[in-house]
Amino acid sequence: MIPRKVTANLFAPACVGKGLPTYDGGRLPTYGAAMRRAAFLCRRAIRFIAVLLALSVTAAAWAAGEPVAEVSLAIGVSRLIGADGNARAIVRGMSVHVGERVETEQGGHVHLRFIDGAFVSVRPGSRLAIETYRYDAARPQDSAIRFTLEQGVARAISGKGAEAARDHFRLNTPIAAIGVRGTDFVVLAGPEWVRVAINSGAIVLTPLGEGCLAVTLGPCTGAGTSTLSADMGKVVLDFQRQVGAPRLVPINGTLAPDRLNPPVPEEPRSVVRNSTTVSETSIEVLAAQAVAAAQGQVIDPQPPAPAVVPPPAVVPPPVVAPPPAVVPPPVPLPPATIVWGRWTAPLPGDTLSGSYAEASAGRKVTAGNLYFALFRPEPPLPVLVSNLGRVDFTLRDAQVWLMRGGSADLGRVEGAWLSVDFGARQFGTRVDMSHAAAGAASLQLGGAIRDDGVFAVRPGDGRAVAGALTVDGKEAGYFFEQPVTTGAGGTFMGITRWVR
Image (cartoon, rainbow, N blue to C red; front, side):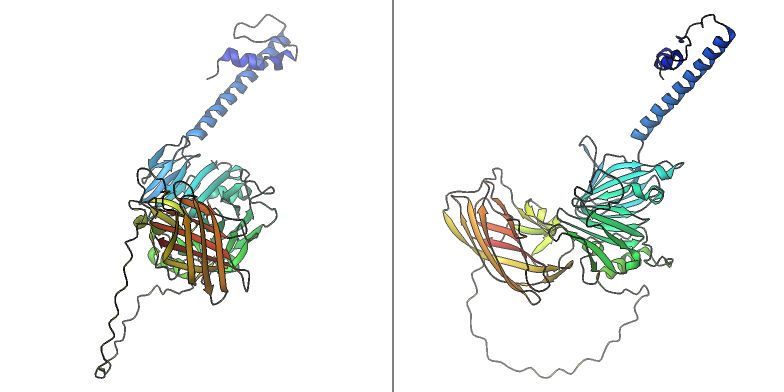
């Protein structure tokens, strides 16, 4: 509470300006009746303003300390990072405040229910920051909401605040801003890529830049602004920094957010795209249908009919063949200690990467992109050997995909070489690759290696090589990216492992 005398002195100039005596909390001086009446009214006004000031201070303190959401579901490993940097394990029923960040590891799911009824799902391998959340049930049109999805996948269902103040809602990603128009949507975000799928309503996406700043609220209207609505059908909005402008991509065959990072059955039902009501199908079936829709499939909620077992086929007698020629077995390679882990579901035909949990067991990440991360054992002193001279490595295994229009198609690695000069801390490498729709391509790059064995080269033209060697110099691995300049375009993206 503000002392009466201090408050009175704060507002005394308003009375002095009218030729009235100031009030210091003691007796009023003796004046005429008119003067006494005016002084009395001035004193009442001062007290009224003091009460309003005290109430506003109290309201501000309440708003700063009150939670804005509660954890309604927590599965797996997840953390709540406070504004002070301290981390706490997330459990169901925990309160969440403005300035805090939700982080999930692989297999971790966190659901948040906000004070205005909004819902947010933070899926595995994701980071979501709650930067602003102001909501007053008496004046929902004055709401202000801003999130930042730093990486991963999140689903957001608008609450009363976003519905009443759409011009004050914002979800930022590292490269784009998203505004809403009464919406249920799912976002996949990375440092160079953002993809949005929508269940109902509409969103507006704009690349961040001079005309669209991350600190503002609401949708941007600058260059490159694109709209995605449920009325557009089965499409996603895709924006890659290197492409330059958002694009609408059909869901069929596309790596939609729900396919890359599926929801758990406990997520709320999705509103059907044409705004019709949802039948009383189980949540598990609805979740399966959402993922299947992203894969261009159809799932019948009714149980399948019993399969008809055909009669056994007549097997002809076996043909006796001459014994095969004896071929000496190949010399086996030593077991690999450097492994690839994936952040999301496996790409089509992926036989080289394992889950994040498998790859990270006893290892640390060295390099990665939106899909993969390279893990290696980390000794107490992670310094690369320097006494091996120049070494030509042997390719252990490799895979490549053609990334085009949001889809991933398995290609072929036709050949590759890697040469490392340990003394000079330099490397050079080449990969030859092909795909039926894009033809053949080659990538050749080289550069410096850090003392810890990690290397990365990005010339700025879309090409990239980044990876690491084990500190004993016996193994290496890297991912690579090579733009396709012919046909329908796209980018070759692949991963490799090497042995000395």
